[in-house]
Length: 57
Image 1 (tube, rainbow, N blue to C red):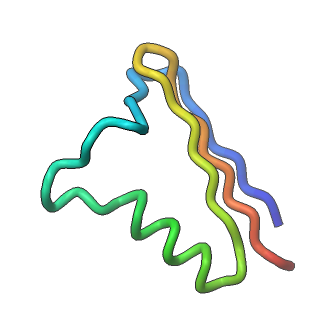
Image 2 (spheres, rainbow, N blue to C red; image 1 turned 90 degrees about the horizontal axis):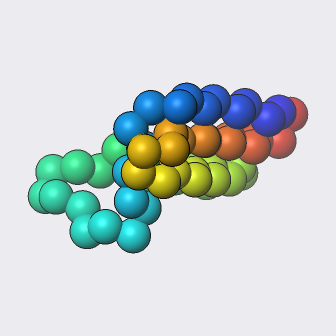
């Protein structure tokens, strides 16, 4: 199963340090791994964000 979600919003810098208490992407990665899947995120400031979740059917 593949789920793709994207937008053309503000985007963000994936390499930027995370603020304390912000664990959204880490939590999503952990949940995907627990299902035997993979989460890929790409984003650029001013260009939007794309997220792909792949899990076994």
